[in-house]
Length: 221
Image (cartoon, rainbow, N blue to C red; front, side, top):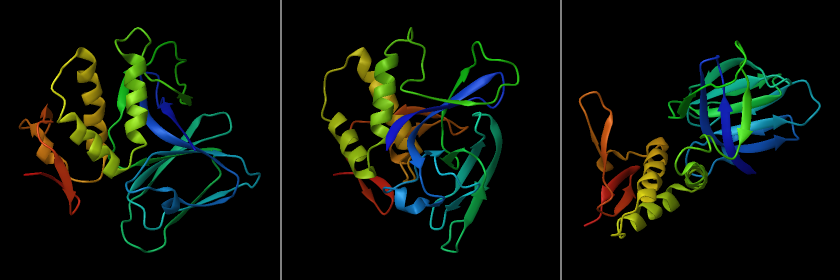
């Protein structure tokens, strides 16, 4: 399983980017729950089998959006798996590329450049920012590395940051990537953030160690 940035254009104006586990499917039936670690993840399936249909079993999975692309990599439609119980839930599709995106996840949006009007397609890459942007390669590397961590590993990474006293410019970008991944996890991380009246984050606290208790972060004494 490889991890890359999935970059998707649904129109000729913007491209959205998010990390994804890239998986080649040799079988026509996929039990998505078996692919998960301890939190919902973005998956991008490349269909390698020769059957007409792929059957996705989303039983016991958190809510997902599904984005479909044909063999020419063109976007053909979207559907949703919003059930949260244990009742069986399956989706069958003829798409040759399928993105499973946790419902409500945050992703980066960028203005398209040199894209044909009406083109709605995807690319996979190791970065998502222009090379001229400050720390572009590092931001991509940090983002992908945080995406691959379990909840426990991500919290330990955060706790290690609380012990660091020095500050350089790159650390601000590093902590921004860390913050974004924490907010995309399913546990409650509100204790780390200050919000304005509209619910937008205005501050990110890394001064104290935390622990995950009953799916909620709490400061350690």
